[in-house]
Length: 231
View (spheres, rainbow, N blue to C red):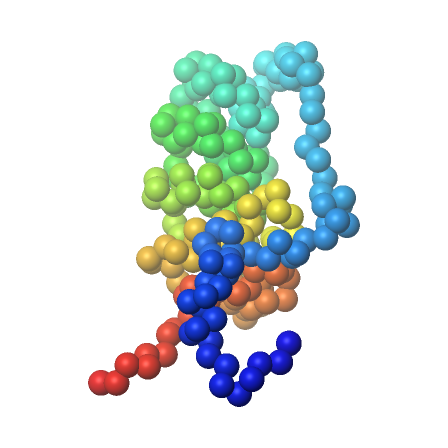
């Protein structure tokens, strides 16, 4: 579209500003394709009998059971196990993932709440240096991200590879089902965010977003503004 020389952008804003996407709805509706949606893996649905059988098989392995239960949103099982042995909240698998990590990357905020209430550390590290906030941001679990931040999660924590939660949120923008844009907006709105931190590959989160997804424009939220007001 060509505009006349006397075209005034401010006039366009005043007459058509209501059409400009804002806030959580600011990402383009065309950013994902039908092919992208078809490639999205649907969560497998199991019967209650299937879950009960799994729990029965793990009943003599409480550490494995609570890790599995946290990942699979079995809140009553998590609470029952913690009542019997409160120290289970601190257990982890061979890679260092705690029940909180598993609940975080699976997006189970009620389980996350129960674990933190039971005394789980908010910032435990895996062997690769991932915190639960890293896990939640990698899979764009925006509700969990918000909850963890409210309970003291380290916003700018870096993994062994130098990745911050923002790096991970920026790298996962392919699926509308995972609230990737909302997660980025939430992180970028945090007062103490350090968006310029570099990963071990010498990339900022903005650079990751530029090459891996459609939401790079959201980083305008943290870009330096140029003042046009005279001193």
